[in-house]
Length: 324
Image 1 (tube, helix red, strand yellow):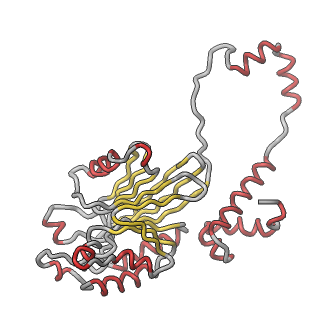
Image 2 (spheres, rainbow, N blue to C red):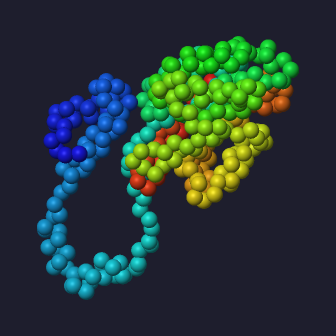
Image 3 (cartoon, rainbow, N blue to C red):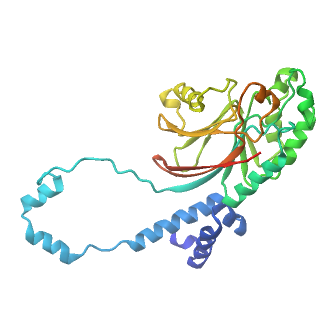
């Protein structure tokens, strides 16, 4: 980006807005894309770094030259003078901050799902200025052949649940990336209908990533986020299920970040250099789960992640529970 591509006073105005309300709201305020606003932020940081650099102190350099011989200076440079220092890697933890809203298992159409809680999550996402929203499947409750399941529905059938899902996600404050889950695929099994794919196809603010899993690759970094659902069951230890999923990834296919749905359990762990989150659920404990002695961790996440050209510099997840 050249010096003449933006006026200094305009750049200052943009940066003041970013500091006050974040990239998402600043871009919205000035009617420019978030990617453009990010470029302005990077340019501003680079410009400030250049202006903060100071010339070396000539007096200090002169004292060093007077005190040491050429051989001693060479030894200092090579690190061989006196006790050798321990070698270590210096990691670059700076980069660009990406804020992600994470939810899963909304089960829209179930009487155990309150859309008011999804709206509460959306309001927190907007307040945090999330860049994207991720959903790890079971968007809808579906309709199974389980006896009595139909009596647990507020919206019965494909069309009713699709329409309600459209209404709910029309209120999302950022672009939504989602996969489908086993509940969504009951319509596929019964009639070949793909409800999540159709939901996303109808909405420019949503992207369908696939059945059970899908990847998001962040621009300007090698970071890959994998959304995962699955059809396996819960484990006694909440970490065990995620550990086995991570173990199944081959070395060249590992994501940097893994978001898991399906089990309705919340947790964070760092395994095989992957930041892993059990995303919980937006559905309260159903009668079926209670009968199986399965808890439902109801809530959502906001993740602040610093990414650079090496990967994830830092990862800060925050869990927002609903007490119901």
